[in-house]
Image 1: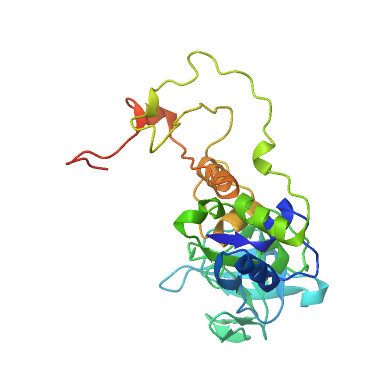
Image 2 (image 1 turned 90 degrees about the vertical axis):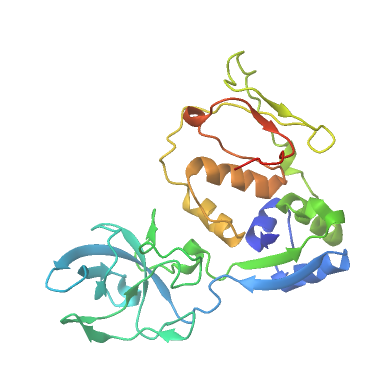
Length: 296
């Protein structure tokens, strides 16, 4: 179980002078097995700037698509920088993360000004993989917002500490941020308010609100299996950047809005959840043991 420290701090009031290693020691004292304390983007040495793409020139004389970009990184970063980039998933006006010459990225890769594709490239527009934030390498990072020239690190989770806990079968509650936060609250002697009790008053579902039958075939193994229909949102909308950061830090890959929200709630509360596409449901959905010859 991977527990981002900032997420734990949101759930309980941990003293500000306590580091991830301090929290790990407390959890070990409570009988949990903390394997590592990881720093997200710990291999980054140097500044990362919030930049805004001002111009893009498509260089078509090469075998692969190449773009010559003018990116404003603010006065602190030296103003407008010319940068060569091969990614295609950004446009003029987008907010990006820029590493300038002198910054060292994970793996010991030092950014330097260099002549390439007929231009002097004066930095790098970064992807999540290049910053060791995730394995996502399908294009560079495009931020939803940001102040040009500001430190991009806090916006993308660089420096975030994450506790990696090996959870034994008798401590299943620690498979959630709620359970880990409760242990820390006891250790530090601070109040704990269960986030699972913050339930909004929802209207009773209509009789036809669940268009598929559901239930459990073995109440000893799964005492409750229910469905609820959720409508009125755009399933193609992007998940918030902060949510994607937390999911990635917790070891999950952001997929889509519906999947990300259910995974987020699952990690925080420890309640297994799954998002089904209502248009693709065909027949009953039940929790049960697989029969011989069953396929997935």
